[in-house]
Amino acid sequence: AQKITQTQPGMFVQEKEAVTLDCTYDTSDPSYGLFWYKQPSSGEMIFLIYQGSYDQQNATEGRYSLNFQKARKSANLVISASQLGDSAMYFCAMREGYTGNQFYFGTGTSLTVIP
Amino acid sequence: DTEVTQTPKHLVMGMTNKKSLKCEQHMGHRAMYWYKQKAKKPPELMFVYSYEKLSINESVPSRFSPECPNSSLLNLHLHALQPEDSALYLCASSPRQKRQGEFYGYTFGSGTRLTVV
Image 1 (cartoon, one colour):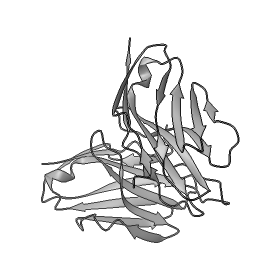
Image 2: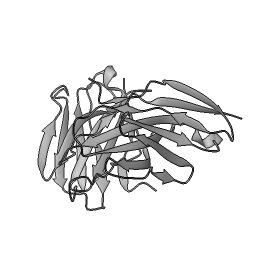
Image 3: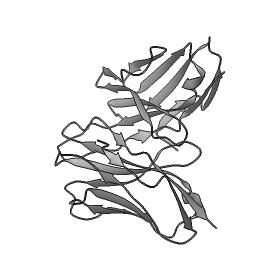
């Protein structure tokens, strides 16, 4: 089974609007961490936001927030007030277990912001 | 500026060439990784160096060989590559997990775009 599932290969959003990128995960370990990365066309993977499985509150970082629904095993990324520079690939990822050595990536969502 | 430095940023090589990719970090991270990424796909793990121990993805062909001269430096030696090896090669590092339930993300370099001709 896929550890991380991103069901939206491509998304479009109007500039200044909010957009939600979906991510569901699969683990039987109670201890895990969820991450979102942005990858512009330049190639660098940029860390956006982190949510730990024991965190009580949803994570927020500036215009990024993570809608964490533990029972549904979902960790959707919400980008508010989209900007043209937000156009990029977005990857959801997970580390699990005590060592957390392996990093599982989803297949990614390509976001295009329309002026 | 990224704290993981990869050189070169672009590399074009022939199928008979030998070249090396370099990755350096000075954050004191004890785990470093090489990933291969094709366009519009997620990164695929190739190698892990964690506390001087190498872990290999067994699907990686032997024409790729990693080298870790010290805890800050990770090289990827390339020899007799094929055109299908053309991709973005990403290096990453991460700190040690201090306690259960606390996870750190990877810090990635900006990558080397490799073209094999």
